[in-house]
Amino acid sequence: MAATGKLTLLLPVTLSSRSSHRTRGFMQNPRRQPPQRLTAAATETSSYNLPSRSSPETPEARQIRLETESALEWGGVCGRLVHFASTAAGRAACEGGRVPVGQSREESERLLDQTAAAVLLPTPLDFGGVEDVSALVAAAAAGRALAVRELCAVGRSIRAVQAVFDQLRRLADDMPDGRYSSLVDILQGCDFLTELVQRIEFCLDSTLSLVLDRASKKLEIIRRERRRNIEMLESLLKDTAAKIFQAGGIDSPLVTKRRSRMCVGVKASHKHLVPGGIVLSSSGSGATYFMEPWDAVELNNREVKLSGDERAEELAILRLLTSMIADSKLKIRNLMDKVLELDLACARGSYARWTNGVKPTFTDSYTISQSDQYTDYSVYIEGIRHPLLLEQSLMAEESTTEAPEMPVPLDMWVKRTQG
Image (tube, rainbow, N blue to C red; front, side, top):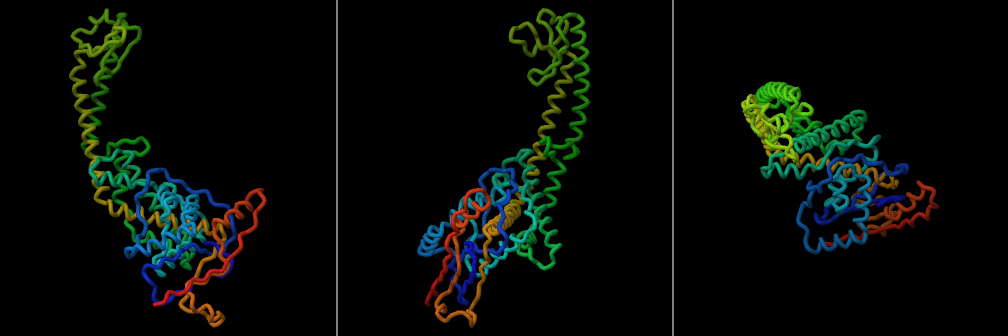
Protein backbone atom coordinates (compact mmCIF):
# COMPACT_ATOMS: atom_id res chain seq x y z
CA MET A 1 0.00 0.00 0.00
CA ALA A 2 1.07 3.56 -0.53
CA ALA A 3 1.85 5.70 2.45
CA THR A 4 2.89 9.22 3.24
CA GLY A 5 4.50 8.77 6.62
CA LYS A 6 6.33 6.19 8.64
CA LEU A 7 5.79 2.51 7.98
CA THR A 8 7.35 0.09 10.46
CA LEU A 9 6.66 -3.62 10.78
CA LEU A 10 7.59 -4.84 14.25
CA LEU A 11 7.88 -8.60 14.22
CA PRO A 12 8.62 -11.23 16.85
CA VAL A 13 11.97 -12.97 16.49
CA THR A 14 10.23 -16.23 15.61
CA LEU A 15 7.73 -15.88 12.79
CA SER A 16 5.08 -18.42 11.89
CA SER A 17 5.69 -19.95 8.47
CA ARG A 18 2.04 -19.36 7.63
CA SER A 19 2.20 -15.63 8.21
CA SER A 20 1.87 -13.55 5.05
CA HIS A 21 3.22 -10.02 4.76
CA ARG A 22 2.28 -7.84 1.82
CA THR A 23 5.18 -6.17 0.11
CA ARG A 24 3.43 -3.19 -1.37
CA GLY A 25 5.22 -0.39 0.44
CA PHE A 26 7.79 1.64 -1.47
CA MET A 27 10.52 4.24 -1.39
CA GLN A 28 9.61 7.90 -1.73
CA ASN A 29 10.18 9.30 -5.20
CA PRO A 30 8.72 12.05 -7.37
CA ARG A 31 5.49 10.96 -9.02
CA ARG A 32 5.30 10.48 -12.75
CA GLN A 33 2.95 9.07 -15.35
CA PRO A 34 2.82 5.32 -15.74
CA PRO A 35 5.58 4.43 -18.25
CA GLN A 36 4.56 2.79 -21.49
CA ARG A 37 5.40 -0.87 -21.27
CA LEU A 38 7.65 -2.69 -23.67
CA THR A 39 5.41 -5.32 -25.21
CA ALA A 40 6.31 -8.90 -26.01
CA ALA A 41 5.16 -10.66 -29.13
CA ALA A 42 3.51 -13.79 -27.77
CA THR A 43 -0.06 -13.84 -26.53
CA GLU A 44 -0.41 -17.40 -25.23
CA THR A 45 -1.54 -17.96 -21.68
CA SER A 46 1.51 -18.33 -19.51
CA SER A 47 2.26 -21.50 -17.57
CA TYR A 48 5.42 -20.22 -15.93
CA ASN A 49 5.59 -20.44 -12.18
CA LEU A 50 6.13 -17.93 -9.45
CA PRO A 51 7.73 -19.00 -6.17
CA SER A 52 5.34 -21.35 -4.39
CA ARG A 53 4.46 -21.36 -0.73
CA SER A 54 7.13 -22.97 1.41
CA SER A 55 4.57 -25.12 3.25
CA PRO A 56 0.97 -26.13 2.48
CA GLU A 57 -1.70 -23.81 3.83
CA THR A 58 -4.14 -25.12 6.37
CA PRO A 59 -7.83 -24.54 5.50
CA GLU A 60 -8.03 -21.96 8.28
CA ALA A 61 -4.95 -20.08 7.07
CA ARG A 62 -6.22 -20.11 3.50
CA GLN A 63 -9.60 -18.75 4.56
CA ILE A 64 -7.95 -15.94 6.52
CA ARG A 65 -5.69 -15.11 3.59
CA LEU A 66 -8.56 -15.00 1.11
CA GLU A 67 -10.65 -12.80 3.42
CA THR A 68 -7.69 -10.46 3.91
CA GLU A 69 -7.02 -10.23 0.19
CA SER A 70 -10.66 -9.48 -0.45
CA ALA A 71 -10.80 -6.79 2.23
CA LEU A 72 -7.65 -5.13 0.87
CA GLU A 73 -8.83 -5.47 -2.75
CA TRP A 74 -5.60 -7.29 -3.54
CA GLY A 75 -6.94 -8.41 -6.91
CA GLY A 76 -7.54 -4.79 -7.87
CA VAL A 77 -4.00 -3.82 -6.90
CA CYS A 78 -2.59 -6.71 -8.96
CA GLY A 79 -4.80 -5.65 -11.86
CA ARG A 80 -3.23 -2.20 -11.84
CA LEU A 81 0.20 -3.77 -12.28
CA VAL A 82 -0.89 -5.11 -15.69
CA HIS A 83 -0.16 -1.66 -17.13
CA PHE A 84 3.41 -1.79 -15.80
CA ALA A 85 4.32 -5.39 -16.73
CA SER A 86 6.32 -5.83 -19.93
CA THR A 87 5.86 -9.51 -20.83
CA ALA A 88 2.83 -11.61 -21.70
CA ALA A 89 3.57 -13.89 -18.74
CA GLY A 90 3.87 -10.90 -16.41
CA ARG A 91 0.56 -9.44 -17.51
CA ALA A 92 -1.12 -12.82 -17.14
CA ALA A 93 0.26 -13.14 -13.60
CA CYS A 94 -1.06 -9.70 -12.69
CA GLU A 95 -4.47 -10.34 -14.21
CA GLY A 96 -4.70 -13.60 -12.29
CA GLY A 97 -3.71 -12.00 -8.99
CA ARG A 98 -0.51 -14.08 -8.89
CA VAL A 99 1.84 -11.30 -7.84
CA PRO A 100 4.15 -12.89 -5.22
CA VAL A 101 3.89 -12.01 -1.54
CA GLY A 102 6.25 -12.91 1.25
CA GLN A 103 5.54 -16.09 3.19
CA SER A 104 8.19 -15.16 5.75
CA ARG A 105 10.02 -12.08 6.89
CA GLU A 106 13.07 -13.06 4.84
CA GLU A 107 11.04 -13.53 1.67
CA SER A 108 9.15 -10.28 2.24
CA GLU A 109 12.41 -8.38 2.65
CA ARG A 110 13.81 -9.97 -0.51
CA LEU A 111 10.76 -8.89 -2.52
CA LEU A 112 10.92 -5.41 -1.01
CA ASP A 113 14.60 -5.13 -1.93
CA GLN A 114 13.75 -6.07 -5.51
CA THR A 115 11.02 -3.44 -5.66
CA ALA A 116 13.27 -0.78 -4.14
CA ALA A 117 16.02 -1.58 -6.65
CA ALA A 118 13.54 -1.41 -9.55
CA VAL A 119 12.43 2.04 -8.36
CA LEU A 120 16.02 3.27 -8.82
CA LEU A 121 16.44 2.01 -12.41
CA PRO A 122 17.32 5.02 -14.60
CA THR A 123 15.68 3.47 -17.66
CA PRO A 124 13.21 0.59 -18.06
CA LEU A 125 14.68 -2.82 -18.82
CA ASP A 126 13.95 -3.93 -22.37
CA PHE A 127 11.81 -7.07 -22.21
CA GLY A 128 10.58 -6.51 -25.77
CA GLY A 129 11.96 -9.73 -27.26
CA VAL A 130 10.83 -12.00 -24.41
CA GLU A 131 7.97 -14.21 -25.60
CA ASP A 132 5.82 -16.69 -23.73
CA VAL A 133 7.13 -19.96 -25.19
CA SER A 134 5.70 -22.23 -22.50
CA ALA A 135 3.30 -23.94 -24.92
CA LEU A 136 6.09 -24.53 -27.45
CA VAL A 137 8.40 -26.05 -24.84
CA ALA A 138 5.57 -28.31 -23.66
CA ALA A 139 4.86 -29.38 -27.25
CA ALA A 140 8.52 -30.19 -27.81
CA ALA A 141 8.62 -32.22 -24.60
CA ALA A 142 5.52 -34.08 -25.78
CA GLY A 143 7.28 -35.12 -28.98
CA ARG A 144 5.80 -32.77 -31.58
CA ALA A 145 8.34 -31.45 -34.08
CA LEU A 146 8.30 -27.67 -33.93
CA ALA A 147 8.07 -25.58 -37.08
CA VAL A 148 10.78 -23.14 -38.12
CA ARG A 149 9.00 -20.08 -36.75
CA GLU A 150 8.32 -21.88 -33.45
CA LEU A 151 11.95 -22.90 -33.01
CA CYS A 152 13.05 -19.36 -33.83
CA ALA A 153 10.61 -18.00 -31.24
CA VAL A 154 12.21 -20.15 -28.53
CA GLY A 155 15.73 -19.12 -29.53
CA ARG A 156 14.75 -15.47 -29.86
CA SER A 157 13.13 -15.44 -26.41
CA ILE A 158 16.15 -17.03 -24.72
CA ARG A 159 18.42 -14.55 -26.49
CA ALA A 160 16.18 -11.69 -25.30
CA VAL A 161 16.43 -12.84 -21.67
CA GLN A 162 20.21 -12.83 -22.02
CA ALA A 163 20.00 -9.28 -23.38
CA VAL A 164 17.90 -8.16 -20.40
CA PHE A 165 20.46 -9.64 -18.02
CA ASP A 166 23.33 -7.96 -19.90
CA GLN A 167 21.52 -4.62 -19.73
CA LEU A 168 20.96 -5.06 -16.00
CA ARG A 169 24.60 -5.98 -15.39
CA ARG A 170 25.79 -2.89 -17.25
CA LEU A 171 23.60 -0.73 -15.03
CA ALA A 172 24.93 -2.54 -11.97
CA ASP A 173 28.54 -2.08 -13.08
CA ASP A 174 27.95 1.66 -13.41
CA MET A 175 26.71 1.76 -9.81
CA PRO A 176 29.23 -0.11 -7.63
CA ASP A 177 27.14 0.55 -4.49
CA GLY A 178 25.19 -2.65 -5.20
CA ARG A 179 21.82 -0.94 -5.49
CA TYR A 180 20.72 -3.33 -8.24
CA SER A 181 22.15 -6.50 -6.71
CA SER A 182 18.74 -7.87 -5.71
CA LEU A 183 17.64 -7.68 -9.35
CA VAL A 184 20.89 -9.09 -10.72
CA ASP A 185 20.59 -12.01 -8.30
CA ILE A 186 17.33 -13.10 -9.96
CA LEU A 187 19.06 -14.11 -13.20
CA GLN A 188 22.54 -14.63 -11.79
CA GLY A 189 23.73 -18.17 -12.38
CA CYS A 190 21.03 -19.02 -14.94
CA ASP A 191 21.95 -21.17 -17.91
CA PHE A 192 21.25 -19.06 -20.99
CA LEU A 193 21.64 -22.11 -23.25
CA THR A 194 24.11 -20.41 -25.56
CA GLU A 195 24.84 -23.54 -27.57
CA LEU A 196 21.14 -24.20 -28.23
CA VAL A 197 20.47 -20.61 -29.30
CA GLN A 198 23.51 -20.53 -31.56
CA ARG A 199 22.49 -23.83 -33.13
CA ILE A 200 19.00 -22.54 -33.89
CA GLU A 201 20.35 -19.31 -35.36
CA PHE A 202 22.91 -21.22 -37.43
CA CYS A 203 20.36 -23.61 -38.92
CA LEU A 204 17.30 -21.40 -39.39
CA ASP A 205 16.40 -18.07 -40.98
CA SER A 206 13.83 -16.44 -38.71
CA THR A 207 12.96 -13.74 -41.25
CA LEU A 208 12.18 -16.09 -44.14
CA SER A 209 11.14 -19.02 -41.88
CA LEU A 210 13.29 -21.57 -43.68
CA VAL A 211 16.05 -24.08 -42.98
CA LEU A 212 19.39 -22.81 -44.25
CA ASP A 213 21.64 -24.83 -46.56
CA ARG A 214 24.40 -24.86 -43.94
CA ALA A 215 22.20 -26.67 -41.43
CA SER A 216 23.66 -29.97 -42.66
CA LYS A 217 26.06 -31.15 -45.33
CA LYS A 218 23.43 -33.53 -46.72
CA LEU A 219 20.89 -30.71 -47.12
CA GLU A 220 23.48 -28.56 -48.86
CA ILE A 221 24.24 -31.34 -51.39
CA ILE A 222 20.56 -32.09 -52.04
CA ARG A 223 19.73 -28.45 -52.67
CA ARG A 224 22.72 -27.97 -54.96
CA GLU A 225 21.69 -30.97 -57.07
CA ARG A 226 18.08 -29.80 -57.08
CA ARG A 227 19.00 -26.33 -58.31
CA ARG A 228 21.07 -27.81 -61.12
CA ASN A 229 18.24 -30.17 -62.11
CA ILE A 230 15.65 -27.38 -62.09
CA GLU A 231 17.85 -25.20 -64.28
CA MET A 232 18.07 -28.02 -66.86
CA LEU A 233 14.33 -28.71 -66.65
CA GLU A 234 13.33 -25.05 -67.01
CA SER A 235 15.71 -24.56 -69.94
CA LEU A 236 14.24 -27.58 -71.76
CA LEU A 237 10.63 -26.48 -71.17
CA LYS A 238 11.28 -22.87 -72.22
CA ASP A 239 12.74 -24.06 -75.51
CA THR A 240 9.77 -26.38 -76.05
CA ALA A 241 7.25 -23.63 -75.18
CA ALA A 242 8.97 -21.21 -77.58
CA LYS A 243 8.76 -23.74 -80.43
CA ILE A 244 5.06 -24.35 -79.72
CA PHE A 245 4.41 -20.60 -79.79
CA GLN A 246 6.31 -20.16 -83.07
CA ALA A 247 4.24 -22.98 -84.60
CA GLY A 248 0.99 -21.30 -83.55
CA GLY A 249 0.23 -23.87 -80.88
CA ILE A 250 -0.32 -21.31 -78.08
CA ASP A 251 -1.00 -17.58 -77.84
CA SER A 252 2.11 -17.02 -75.69
CA PRO A 253 4.82 -19.36 -74.38
CA LEU A 254 3.64 -21.02 -71.17
CA VAL A 255 5.66 -23.05 -68.68
CA THR A 256 3.74 -24.10 -65.59
CA LYS A 257 3.30 -26.87 -63.04
CA ARG A 258 0.54 -29.43 -62.81
CA ARG A 259 0.34 -32.38 -60.41
CA SER A 260 3.75 -31.39 -58.98
CA ARG A 261 5.38 -31.75 -62.43
CA MET A 262 6.67 -29.02 -64.73
CA CYS A 263 4.93 -28.87 -68.13
CA VAL A 264 4.01 -26.62 -71.07
CA GLY A 265 0.72 -25.27 -72.35
CA VAL A 266 -0.52 -26.13 -75.83
CA LYS A 267 -3.83 -25.79 -77.65
CA ALA A 268 -5.76 -29.05 -77.71
CA SER A 269 -5.83 -28.85 -81.50
CA HIS A 270 -2.02 -28.68 -81.60
CA LYS A 271 -1.08 -31.40 -79.14
CA HIS A 272 0.86 -33.09 -81.93
CA LEU A 273 3.50 -30.39 -81.42
CA VAL A 274 4.53 -32.29 -78.25
CA PRO A 275 5.15 -35.79 -79.63
CA GLY A 276 5.14 -38.49 -76.98
CA GLY A 277 4.10 -35.94 -74.39
CA ILE A 278 1.88 -36.77 -71.42
CA VAL A 279 -1.31 -34.75 -70.80
CA LEU A 280 -1.29 -33.86 -67.09
CA SER A 281 -4.47 -31.73 -67.13
CA SER A 282 -6.49 -29.33 -69.23
CA SER A 283 -8.05 -25.89 -68.86
CA GLY A 284 -11.63 -25.50 -67.72
CA SER A 285 -12.83 -25.06 -71.28
CA GLY A 286 -10.73 -27.97 -72.53
CA ALA A 287 -9.16 -25.75 -75.18
CA THR A 288 -5.68 -25.96 -73.64
CA TYR A 289 -3.71 -29.01 -72.60
CA PHE A 290 -0.90 -28.96 -70.08
CA MET A 291 1.58 -31.51 -71.34
CA GLU A 292 4.83 -32.94 -70.04
CA PRO A 293 7.29 -33.43 -72.94
CA TRP A 294 8.87 -36.85 -73.12
CA ASP A 295 12.35 -35.39 -72.68
CA ALA A 296 11.25 -33.78 -69.38
CA VAL A 297 9.96 -36.96 -67.73
CA GLU A 298 13.28 -38.05 -66.26
CA LEU A 299 14.13 -34.53 -65.10
CA ASN A 300 10.69 -34.22 -63.48
CA ASN A 301 11.11 -37.58 -61.78
CA ARG A 302 14.40 -36.39 -60.35
CA GLU A 303 12.85 -33.13 -59.20
CA VAL A 304 10.13 -35.00 -57.32
CA LYS A 305 12.70 -37.24 -55.65
CA LEU A 306 15.06 -34.40 -54.70
CA SER A 307 12.15 -32.34 -53.39
CA GLY A 308 11.12 -35.22 -51.13
CA ASP A 309 14.70 -35.75 -49.99
CA GLU A 310 15.02 -32.06 -49.18
CA ARG A 311 11.84 -32.05 -47.13
CA ALA A 312 12.88 -35.20 -45.27
CA GLU A 313 16.26 -33.67 -44.37
CA GLU A 314 14.58 -30.44 -43.26
CA LEU A 315 12.26 -32.41 -40.98
CA ALA A 316 15.23 -34.29 -39.55
CA ILE A 317 16.90 -30.99 -38.69
CA LEU A 318 13.72 -29.60 -37.14
CA ARG A 319 13.30 -32.77 -35.07
CA LEU A 320 16.90 -32.52 -33.88
CA LEU A 321 16.45 -28.91 -32.78
CA THR A 322 13.14 -29.81 -31.16
CA SER A 323 14.78 -32.63 -29.21
CA MET A 324 17.44 -30.18 -27.97
CA ILE A 325 14.67 -27.93 -26.66
CA ALA A 326 12.90 -30.88 -25.06
CA ASP A 327 16.14 -31.95 -23.36
CA SER A 328 16.54 -28.39 -22.01
CA LYS A 329 12.91 -27.91 -20.96
CA LEU A 330 13.68 -27.55 -17.25
CA LYS A 331 16.40 -24.98 -17.89
CA ILE A 332 14.16 -23.02 -20.27
CA ARG A 333 11.27 -23.04 -17.81
CA ASN A 334 13.57 -21.95 -15.00
CA LEU A 335 14.92 -19.15 -17.17
CA MET A 336 11.41 -17.95 -18.03
CA ASP A 337 10.32 -18.20 -14.38
CA LYS A 338 13.24 -15.96 -13.46
CA VAL A 339 12.56 -13.36 -16.12
CA LEU A 340 8.91 -13.35 -14.99
CA GLU A 341 10.09 -12.64 -11.45
CA LEU A 342 12.26 -9.80 -12.77
CA ASP A 343 9.41 -8.37 -14.85
CA LEU A 344 7.08 -8.34 -11.84
CA ALA A 345 9.76 -6.70 -9.69
CA CYS A 346 10.12 -3.94 -12.31
CA ALA A 347 6.34 -3.61 -12.54
CA ARG A 348 6.13 -3.17 -8.77
CA GLY A 349 8.91 -0.60 -8.91
CA SER A 350 7.23 1.42 -11.67
CA TYR A 351 3.94 1.35 -9.79
CA ALA A 352 5.69 2.41 -6.59
CA ARG A 353 7.39 5.30 -8.36
CA TRP A 354 4.08 6.45 -9.79
CA THR A 355 2.25 6.31 -6.45
CA ASN A 356 5.17 7.91 -4.58
CA GLY A 357 5.19 4.95 -2.20
CA VAL A 358 7.18 4.34 0.96
CA LYS A 359 9.26 1.25 1.60
CA PRO A 360 8.29 -0.52 4.85
CA THR A 361 10.99 -1.55 7.29
CA PHE A 362 11.14 -4.48 9.69
CA THR A 363 12.43 -4.32 13.24
CA ASP A 364 12.66 -6.79 16.10
CA SER A 365 12.12 -4.25 18.86
CA TYR A 366 10.86 -0.72 19.42
CA THR A 367 13.19 2.17 20.03
CA ILE A 368 13.20 4.07 23.31
CA SER A 369 11.21 6.88 21.71
CA GLN A 370 8.30 4.56 20.95
CA SER A 371 5.56 4.39 23.51
CA ASP A 372 5.20 1.34 25.74
CA GLN A 373 1.55 1.19 24.74
CA TYR A 374 2.60 -0.24 21.34
CA THR A 375 4.56 -3.18 22.75
CA ASP A 376 1.59 -5.50 22.36
CA TYR A 377 1.52 -4.95 18.60
CA SER A 378 3.59 -6.74 15.94
CA VAL A 379 2.79 -4.36 13.08
CA TYR A 380 2.56 -0.58 13.26
CA ILE A 381 1.86 1.48 10.14
CA GLU A 382 1.51 5.24 10.26
CA GLY A 383 -0.26 7.32 7.60
CA ILE A 384 -1.30 4.52 5.22
CA ARG A 385 -3.36 5.17 2.09
CA HIS A 386 -4.79 2.49 -0.19
CA PRO A 387 -3.19 2.79 -3.66
CA LEU A 388 -6.48 2.25 -5.49
CA LEU A 389 -7.90 5.33 -3.72
CA LEU A 390 -4.70 7.27 -4.21
CA GLU A 391 -4.71 6.58 -7.96
CA GLN A 392 -7.77 8.74 -8.54
CA SER A 393 -5.96 11.79 -7.25
CA LEU A 394 -2.73 10.95 -9.10
CA MET A 395 -4.47 10.49 -12.44
CA ALA A 396 -6.36 13.75 -12.00
CA GLU A 397 -3.11 15.60 -11.31
CA GLU A 398 -1.72 14.38 -14.64
CA SER A 399 -4.74 15.61 -16.61
CA THR A 400 -6.89 18.71 -16.80
CA THR A 401 -9.51 17.07 -14.61
CA GLU A 402 -10.13 18.68 -11.27
CA ALA A 403 -8.29 16.62 -8.69
CA PRO A 404 -10.42 15.02 -5.96
CA GLU A 405 -9.32 15.29 -2.39
CA MET A 406 -6.49 12.99 -1.39
CA PRO A 407 -7.67 10.00 0.67
CA VAL A 408 -7.36 10.43 4.42
CA PRO A 409 -4.28 8.60 5.78
CA LEU A 410 -4.87 6.04 8.52
CA ASP A 411 -2.71 4.49 11.22
CA MET A 412 -2.78 0.72 11.61
CA TRP A 413 -1.80 -1.59 14.47
CA VAL A 414 -1.77 -5.39 14.33
CA LYS A 415 -1.74 -7.07 17.73
CA ARG A 416 0.77 -9.76 18.58
CA THR A 417 -0.30 -13.37 18.47
CA GLN A 418 0.05 -14.91 21.90
CA GLY A 419 1.59 -18.34 22.38
